[in-house]
Length: 227
Image (tube, rainbow, N blue to C red; front, side):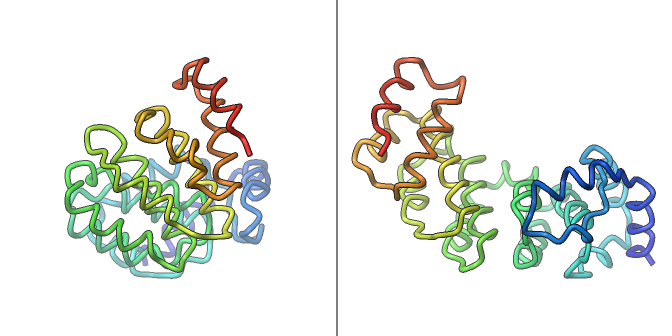
């Protein structure tokens, strides 16, 4: 069966030192659930297995036990070029995403062609009670709607998220820091008027100040706005 085949391939690519390093970065997952496969190898496997007729057996075999299986799953879904099929696979997978790394690796290429359709799903995901579904929604807003598709409605959606979850608020800070780099005039009122919770406000400033896309003058101004 393809599930056994995939697991054997993953273990054949195991790097113990990398497993130990990776597991330390993701403390929410038990160390025994890490195999230790590097991302470039996972991407190669995803391209290979995504072409298989029986890949649906792996995609539907949820939940996966190993972190690396979830990573591979995210990369395989991201390869899907059919928007409807892809969005269905994303919706099936999101409830089983249990860490920031898998959440952030899930980035379907086809989404950039269907932003008008995607935004309706984002509006639903961002209201979820699941940490990584909300994080994914904010990440998609950051990736797809800060340039020509920008609308002031979108940062308002992110600002309206109320959560004590670290991994949600870190993504919200990442979103606003990126938004400052791309839509400074529209976003700076969120800082000036203190529309964000203190943690997200200060993390946004920290990340923005670290960015090469923010001018020195803007960085100086932002530093003076820390709470």
